[in-house]
Image (tube, rainbow, N blue to C red; front, side):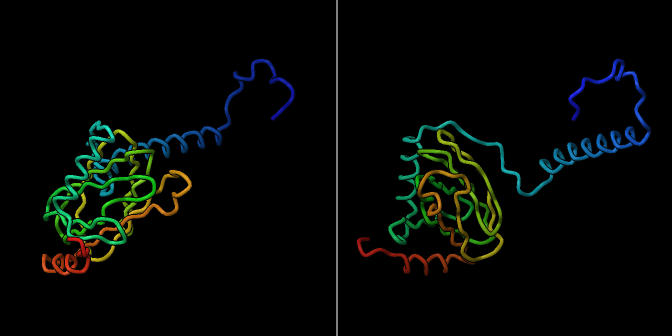
Length: 193
């Protein structure tokens, strides 16, 4: 950077051939990345749907509570455990500082996830499948998920949401069959039920 102003008619000086080449290369790279981004959005496997609904936190909390009561099979560390039917709806609630409830899904079945926050901005990160999404309060986000492997999946908040952010986790158990769901029902059965 110079401290002196440029010479008069500096814009009339011809650009060198190698500089023109680099400008062309940069333009081609930028355009190809732009079109690749559009293609990846259409054909990529990790893109979330664009379905979302406006919902007040209290409305979502009521729907979530009714859904949990309908499909509840027990409790794990004070958090309800639910097992929706194969191909059904999963209503996950983000609230400082936890994801609720613990969900039991069957391998190979597609589920419709509804995600909502009732307080502040949270992040939805489903590991190990690396599914990431931002969850703003006042919206119900709809995502589709088909687990392909049985095991324990972890939900993490990947947006800083306050002092307890590092403790904001949740679980999804993916089982092979309905008999495994029954086994988990017996395992998580709380004494008050």
